[in-house]
Structures are given as structure tokens and as C-alpha cells.
Length: 357
Picture 1 (cartoon, rainbow, N blue to C red):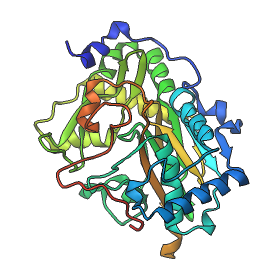
Picture 2: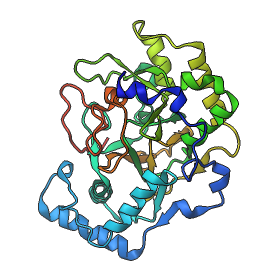
Picture 3: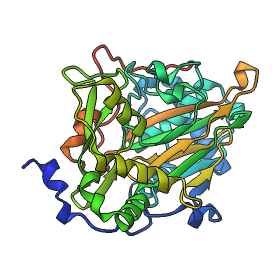
Picture 4: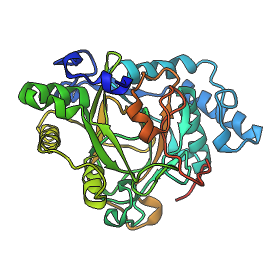
């Protein structure tokens, strides 16, 4: 039996996940400890590091901790990383004076912070290390990914250990972010439907949205929950799971129990007090640990002026201190080595940084 399959032997899986990671939104809505404000001294250090990088002449895709030096901020960033990996699984860094910076300076500072946490991963088949989450008029029905639209985004996880979102512009209306602990979701699933535990840990075929690595099927298979070396990880993309059923007759068919697992997950996530809602302000950086956090957003309406359209910059980050993962993840992430996994690489991918959509 492979390590991945052995990891998900039902008898070895705990009936509840405890600790700071298994939170519910109602517990945190009046507790703002998850919002961390930058100090003026910290902002000055970030700006100095950005100038140091600009003077180096390096391209943004080659940014490193050495070319973006943070002599006193490094412990602070590692503290936030520890909260992501070993605490509640998310943090909001607030107060960057984004209105005073060019897009290039904002991207440099954002990517520099991310690079001090780990390696940066391609977030699409084009090799973009810096993703633009902005309505581009694309249609999900035509195969686009949701970040290219203004549509409501259902709860999901991304294909990297950590996802970061830097807000450049917020929407005229809507676009609020919702997050939830997948560990708390698991606890509720087991409590309400223990008979579905086996179905939670069996593979679900999931559509790659046309971004297919060489030699792979246009879908990948991975359980929604994976128990491995004493840690529970979650992968959930229901829309893409259903698309794999619709588009690929060769993909294994979902069982009734697997569909019931997804129905119950979605029901739990809609219960008042379960998710945590947060509104982005320009200069906010939201960081999430995908193995423990599900995220979604409302649909939104933009201002008429294109320069005022809702615009977030996305990073996918692989920290070298990331948790061990079973082999299932390699089918989507390309590898399972901490610090060098995650992202999307297909034939012809060339890593780059685009400063405009």
C-alpha cells in the first residue's frame, strides 16, 4: 500500500481536530487579533528594501530575500508565517500606504514579503508569479477561472501552501471575503455524519481548467481530506469537481456518498456564525494556509472608471517549513517537497511577473 493510501486508513483518523486551527467565525468576529497593523518603522524598512532591489537591476521574478533585505523585519514575518502554519491559519496585514506607491513598488514590496516566507509559485499556466484578481470579462462557462470574473466565488482552496491577496482597489459594492476553518468543517462532518468518513478520504476527480501538465489527464484526483503524519489537510474545489464529471466521461464517477459529503460541507459553510467575513481595504494583505482554510467572496460591482476597478494581487507561496503531504498532492502540485511544490506548470510555461492585466 502506498504512503498516501496508508495515510487515509479510516481507523487511524481522529474524530476531532482540536487547537487554534479549529475555529468558527463567531469566535473571532469581535476579536481583532488576526488583524496586524504595520508600524511606520516597518513601512520605512519595506520601502528601503524596495529601493535596494530597484538599485540591483534584477527582474521581479528573480527577487530573493538577499536582494530584498529586511534586517529587523525578518522575525516579524516569520512570526506571521508561524501563525499561518501552526496557529489559526490566517492573518490580515493592514496599513501599507498603497496609494503612495507605483504598481511596481507595491509589487516589489509584496513579493519581497512573500519571498521571505518561501518560494513563489506560478498561479496559472502562463507562469505568472504575481496574479491579477480582476474582472476581465471572462466567462466561467467558457473555461475561465473565477478570479477573472466578478462572479461569486464558492468556498475553495488554492494549489499552494499559502495564498496571499494584496488589495490595490476595492469594489464599488460587494466583493467581501469569507473564510472558514476546514478543520472545524471536518469536526462538524464527523459529528453529524460519521458514516460519511470513508467518502471524505477517497479521491475526487477535479477539472484542471485546461492547464494540463505534460503526461497528465485533464483532471486530477485527490481526496477532500487527507490525514498524513498526524496532520489533516483539506482540498476543495466543488465547481471543478462537478466540471470533471460533466466534461470527462473517462473520469471516475462520484458516488452518492461523495456528493453527500460536498452537500454537507456547503451547508455547514452557510450556517450563520461559521465563516468569518472580512472587507478588504486598499493596502491590506490577506494570507491564508490552504490546508486549513477555505475561502470565498461575494460577487461585486465595479466603479465605471477602469482605474477604480476592484484589483487584488495574488501570490502563491511554498514555505520550506511546510507540512509533509501525501503523494496525492503531486498530481496537482507537481511535487510534494516543502518549499518547492505547488503552482501550475504546463508545457511552455515560463515564469514571469506581469504588472498589468
